[in-house]
Each structure stands twice: as structure tokens, then as C-alpha cells.
Length: 262
Length: 224
Image (tube, rainbow over all chains, first blue to last red; front, side, top):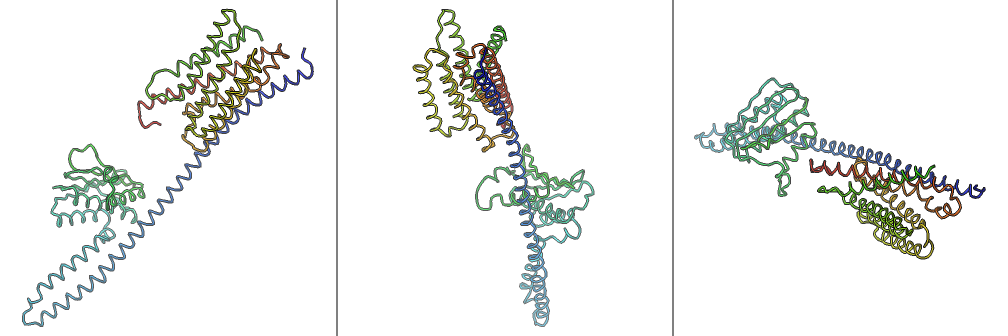
């Protein structure tokens, strides 16, 4: 028969054992829930960081576009206007000379300069995009390259495409422009096809029969200007919440599919 | 509480230890190293049990096998924690294990030379509880995974913490229980064996998780 002190020791052992056991279980449970909470907080922080980065990127691209617009406007209205005025003056001056053909070469050079200023201005901010929308601008882009780069560029519009909001339209155009530009500059292709269609999303496919390239390889090769265009394109794709996929199973050439949610 | 029930519970605990040894040493490529160590600890437990049976069969009652086993198990588990903590706190691990070893040797030869080395068990448990809390703290700070239950070591640690925390007071008062509360000894030790069963079951869950991870890794190399 256990006496009072023995009973107290037995009680102490029982309470101590149960207490320690419960404490261990409580620590483990606390750990599990606290860890979950920490991970949730970490996730929220990451989401905020991504949002902030996106906003910064959006602001940077927006300021880039507005600067382009300003430079394009200045070039077209100021420099282009002045060159046109000089040309008119030169023509009237030539008329007063006994031999009007004397200034013919200077006039041709001036025409070239006016043409170049217009082309640069159009490249910086295509007026067609604002006036007639994305499809017309992409079509015009293809026509320009067909005329100047001597590459067979086909533009296929599978169906009528809905109008996008201006900021989305401009970003989509810039991506398409960069893709066509890359194909013309680097692919050594004989033929480039730009196809546009709308189902649930807007889909622009740009494919060529050139030498092909691996976007991932370009992204990780360090060098002067390597992958800057690709980086800008990816930034725009992210901002549009779009997807840009390269068909890597293709044997020859390159095929990119840009899918933009409407 | 009958002696029969006590033995059944004790045998279940031993059977589970054998299951752990088998599960820990299933030869799969890419098995977690921690699982191997936990397997070694269980192997020591099983081997001690077999040695004790053999001694009892020959009519000898000695406390050396279980005393040595306690020391080996605590050192093995200390190694397990040291590896799990990416070999941080090396000095602390080395010093604490060395002090424990010296204490256990002194205990075996001077203080509890003729009885169960319960003080060694108590000090070992105390050390393992500290290691376990250190491991949990690192888990909180490092946040290595999103799903804790997929980490085998989390289960091993939970098993060790529950068993060692639950049994700490029993180990501390074993001497008193044997000398004074002899009538209640069976109840206390049955409780200890139930804790041991919980310990083995939780470790088995960890080993099962490790096997599952290994299988997933072989199917998809991106699984951590």
C-alpha cells in the first residue's frame, strides 16, 4: 500500500509524463501550423513582389512607348516638315535657274532623307495601329519587310479579329514586330508566314523556313545585347498575361505562337 | 494489468522495430540517408533484444547489453540530427555527445552498475529532446519544403520527441519505481511500451514517406 509521499511521487510521475507528452505533441502541432502560416506569408510576399515588379515593368514600357511616340511625332512634324519645306524651296530655286536639272541629285537625296525620316517615325509609332488597328498594322509591317528585305512574307488572316484596348494592342504589335524582325534579320529564311486567328484568344503564329534557333540558348548566352529583344518580348508577354511558345519539335526553321487573352 | 498483456505489447513493439529495420534497408536507389540511420538505431534495438533473450536462455541476467544499446542508440540519433541539421552546431553535438558518453560509462561502472541504467536513458532522452527542438527550429527558419509531411525526417523527429518526452519522467524515476512503487511498475512500463509502439508507428510512416518520395523521384526527377 503506497503512503502519502509515495502517492505524491506516483502522481508526479504521471503528471510529468503526461505533461511532457502533451508538450511534445503541442510543439509538433504548433510547428506544423506555424510553418504553414510562414509559408503562406512567404507566398503572399512573393506575390506582392511580382506585382510590384510587373507595375515597374509596365511603367517602364509605358514611358518607353510615350517617348517613342514623342520622338516619332517630333521627327515627322518637325524634322520631316523642315525637310519638306527645304525641298519646296529647292524646287522653286531650281525653277529660277537656267538649268533646273542642276539640283536633281540634291533633290533626290532630300527625298531619300524625307523617306527615311518617315520610315523611322513609322517604325517608332505606326500610325496605322492607332487608325486601323492591330491587324492592319501587322499586315503593313509584313508589306514593308516584303518591299525592303526582299523576303517572301505572307500575311494570313484566318478570321475577323476583335479590337483590343490600345495598350494591349500596342504591346501585342511590339511582340509581333520583334518576332518578324528577328526572323528577317537572323533566320536567313526564304519565306516567312504570319498568321492571325481568333477563337477564344487572339493567336498570332510567326514561322519561317530559316536556320532556326533556340530561344533558351540565346537567353543564357551572355554578350553584348544578347537576348534584350527576347527579354522585352517576355516582359510584354507577362504584362499581357499572354503566352509565347516556341515549337521546338520543328525540324527546320522557327515557329512562335503568341496567344493573347481577349 | 496482467503480465500477459504487458508481454504482448512488448512483443508488438519489437515486431515493429523489425519492420522498421526491413523498411529502412530496402535497397532502392536514392534512398534518404536519414532512413538508413534510423534503420541502424532500430537494428541496435532488435539486436539487443535478441542478445537479452539469449542471455536469459542461458540463465544470465546482465544489464550490459541494454546499457550499451542505449548509448549506441543515442549516439546514432545524435548523428542523425547532426546530418539533418546540415552539420551545423558541430561543437555542440560533439561536446554534448561526449559528455553523455562519459556520463553513461560512469553510470554503468559506478552509479547503476547492477541495475537498469535509467539515468543514462534519462540524460539521453533529454539530449534528444533538445536536438529535436533544434531541428524543429531550423525547419521554421529555413522553410525547406511546403508540405512538411513529405519530409521523412519530420516524422522521425516527431516520433523521437513524443517517445523521449513521454518516457523522460519514467526514466528519471525508474530507480524509485523499482525500489518503492514496485506494484505499479507493470502499469508504468506498459505505458512506456505503448509509447514505444507509437514511436515505431510514426517512424514507419516516415519510412513509408521516404519510399514514396524515392518512387516519385524515379518517375519524375524534378521531385525534391
